[in-house]
Amino acid sequence: MQSASLKQEAPGLDPGVSSLLALLSLGVKDIYLGPELPEFLTPALIEQLNQQFGLQPTTQAKDDLHEMLDTDLSSSAAAD
Figure (spheres, rainbow, N blue to C red):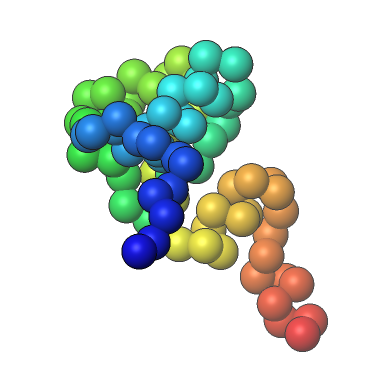
C-alpha cells in the first residue's frame, strides 16, 4: 500500500495559476508565460495583464531572450 501524498490540492485549482496570482499580488512584473497558457486567460485578459503587469506569452526562445536581455543575439550566434 502506497502512502498518501501530504500535498493536498483543491479540486480544479491549477498550481501554476495560484503561483501566477501570487506573483502578481506581490508586484512582480514582466512575466513570460508558456508554452501553453492557462485556459482562463482570454485574449482580452492577456491584453489587460500585459498593460498592467507586462505579462506576455512566450514566442520563440531566441526572440524572447532578445527581448528580455535587450540585445542582438544574431551577432553572438555568428561568433560561435
